[in-house]
Image (cartoon, rainbow, N blue to C red):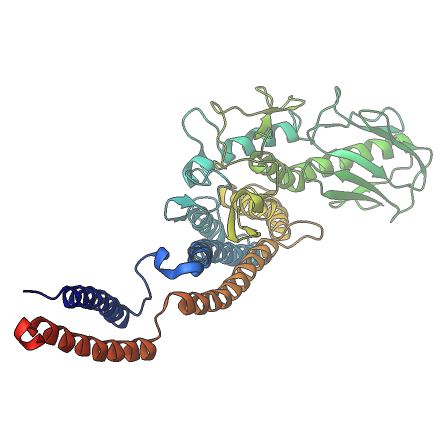
Length: 499
């Protein structure tokens, strides 16, 4: 015989034991893992907040990874720019101090070194960071420049810098070697100097002519420009006339002739005669010789710089430019080089927007940084242009004007490697990249502070308080032990004991 009431009671006790064992198992899990629940559902009303906090923490982790990656890239860019700046300063100092000491190659030791130093610059510009080239703008999968050999020496049918300079030299000097100027024999007492007809972009351009005692000076006027010197009487010894010329590279040169009674006259002088027509003939001969020397020295150096600027100044819609020839000595205009006949030194992305915007990374919810660089930016391009001209130009110790030509070129290269007011400097690029790094580091600091706060909040939601859980386990174990004893007593109860 069984007792119905007792059976029902024991069944309830057994169910309660099962529930307590489940609760105990969960508390032991919380004590072991430190987590309130293995699912968001177990967090109750705080589950939505926990999901949001974890999403924010994941975003901060992603931003941190992006900041780390961009910092590595920018650091490599800064290293390359520092190397370029160091090479630029070295070549600048060498160009301004090197004497005319040629070897068998027709170059000085510093010129030969410049070629190797230019190769260092190109290597720095073509340094990749992982799978991205850092000086190619948006074209991160392409090296920024062609090889040194192709740029300087050409590639098969494609002209390099050397050929472009040689063609431009012919065009600027002209067939007479007078820099595309015409100085015909004196017509009586009248001496004329004029630019080539038809008008041309090459050679020296008349800018101004100073007055001269004993002569009527007219011009420069017209297009092409011309000037005349009409000897109405004879100048006095020491009287001088100065011609000012605009050079192809934008520089100016002056030529001064001084009247003298010395026979023969020295360099930069012309002989005075008792007859003005004879003085005019002497003046014409002196002017022709002085212009020819100026063309062989300063003009030749300026021509090389102009050719290099045309060759390296490439961008979107701006291909390398070269002389429209042959023939080159009578050419009148430049023509765009094509991919099939002229090397394009910069092989990265050619954009019209700001270079920094060619690489952008998001480093916070409402913050992006720009760190793109193009190798054809003005500061980098100017450095390469000047070093390249210095590296490819050759001279001859036996040529009467080459020492002055070397001095004229060296001065231009040295000046070109100096910082110019109103033009981009390498330090400007470095400063912009440094600002990017500062911005990212500030963002990282803010994110670390936010991360600490969010983790504290999430811990308060997800973490199980260890002391409280331990106390609950002890209390539950006591209850469970008592329940087990009660259950055992109930199951030992028989009708005999009951009666």
